[in-house]
Image (cartoon, rainbow, N blue to C red; front, side, top):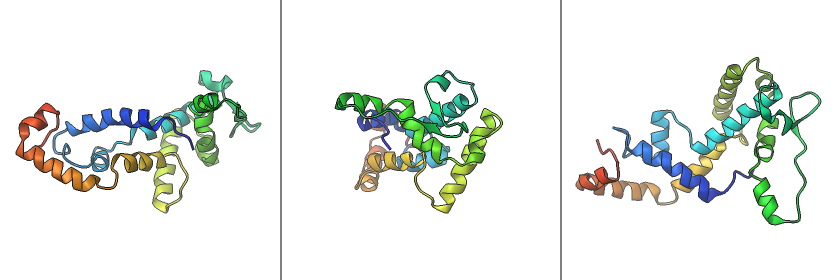
Length: 184
């Protein structure tokens, strides 16, 4: 699924990376470990989750998106992905519309998650579904965007470079302070 402009996604993600470096006792950990310790997700995953919550609200008539999204007769699936244009610029822009971002993610959710009785129950059911599905190793769901972000952020030599960088910061605490990295 298209998730948007990766350059922009990684720039926005760098804000969270930079902020989590400031937190005591986790500042020197790799980004993926900081997220686990702090019980956070990547911002890209949070965007996908927020999109799903908006689609739920639209399916219940609680959102202004109800007129933007087309639902099946049962009200459980999002339909009518717009056709391709001959103009590649229009196709690139269209990929960022919520309709294109969420259609596959929403349609893959089980019915018991989609028919939740309230927004808070939907959020709870979505989180339970995520935990159960991740534990069973089933692929193709919205949270896998975090894996893609982390693979791009923590490339091939990331851990070795991180170890060297941490050693440098411990030897030069004034640099860590200037970069707002908590080395405690």
